[in-house]
Amino acid sequence: DAKTTQPNSMESNEEEPVHLPCNHSTISGTDYIHWYRQLPSQGPEYVIHGLTSNVNNRMASLAIAEDRKSSTLILHRATLRDAAVYYCILRWGDGQNFVFGPGTRLSVLP
Amino acid sequence: EAQVTQNPRYLITVTGKKLTVTCSQNMNHEYMSWYRQDPGLGLRQIYYSMNVEVTDKGDVPEGYKVSRKEKRNFPLILESPSPNQTSLYFCASTDRLNTEAFFGQGTRLTVV
Image 1 (cartoon, rainbow over the protein chains, first blue to last red):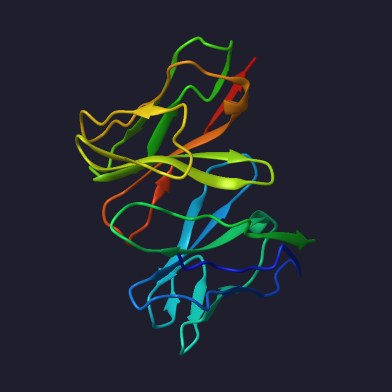
Image 2: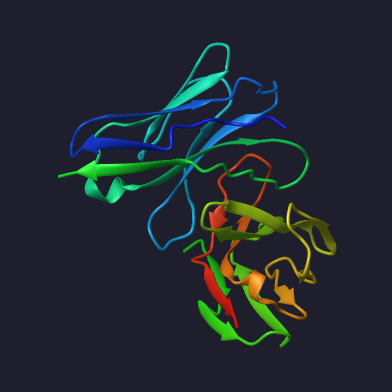
């Protein structure tokens, strides 16, 4: 199984950009890279996903390395509401198996 | 509004008393799954279903049952709950392999 590695925690100041890294050196060609986040006392929430090209949506941007062995979730201007655990997940196989690692706990300082 | 609804949100029960946690989605999704979340262990998949009458075990299926008799509902059944099933449970649904998954708000279960 392809796995991901993320830092346990990161800190950011409010209104500054945040770059959350994820390593997935054993990624296969058909694995999509997904990011979810979990705010306190809530279920995981979809953030963004991509395969090879960089992706942007209203929440964030996803930068994928050319060799696909790593990716970076970019929050362009962190707010206090962005404080959450962020999960980088590879989606694979013919089922519905999200494999959640411990994620990165992001703290946003006012 | 697209959503996954779990009930109940909170439940305290006694060992051995059968219970069912319901999960319903309004998006006509094919795929549904159940997870449990425990401190230090993260989210682990219990069971998943790829369509009506098609279910399969996830990583931690022991002590749980599921059924998928209709597309919108995917109940989680604990026939004989034990204290080690005290946890926070999440249901999720998605329409295809690599699109956005929607998670419910969670059910906090305590078995005493």
